[in-house]
Image (cartoon, rainbow over all chains, first blue to last red; front, side, top):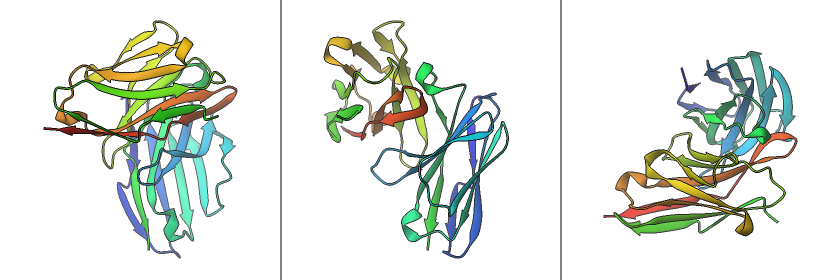
Length: 115
Length: 113
């Protein structure tokens, strides 16, 4: 299995809702990432987990809450989002750290719309 | 200075023509460079990567890139464009001692029939 899966594919939520995005990989990768991507822009890093521990938080607002229950699964919990949070949310994984030449494997993304 | 710079936010070529997408990197990044492709409403897919083994790197879908240290460039080429190549292309480099990528701003490739 050489893919990263994400669910749901599309999500529409109101500003008072609580929802979660899910990401899964079964490649034995020890690093997992959440990105936010707006139209016509590159992906913007939000969080990095290494060995199931949060290693990077790019000053993301607390209405986004990541969770890594095990080495294969990554969640992003959403609460009280704003319309400007509407974007494509991408999950990625890598076998190890990137600065030694490892690449990232990306999931197909979740298209989030906040009303 | 930007760590990864892509010149040209939009490139348009005719089907069958040469594709050239430009990427320049800062000397402050590790010697590992990547090209990713993104089709509309999809995730990013790795096209190829440079990891110091050979300066000319061949990737999927007929793409290749040449690492030129003297020019700090890693341009992506394909001899003959196909309609299915129309997509957004991102050049990326890692950051020393931080487990994150620098992404270029992206180049949207349009292929005309």
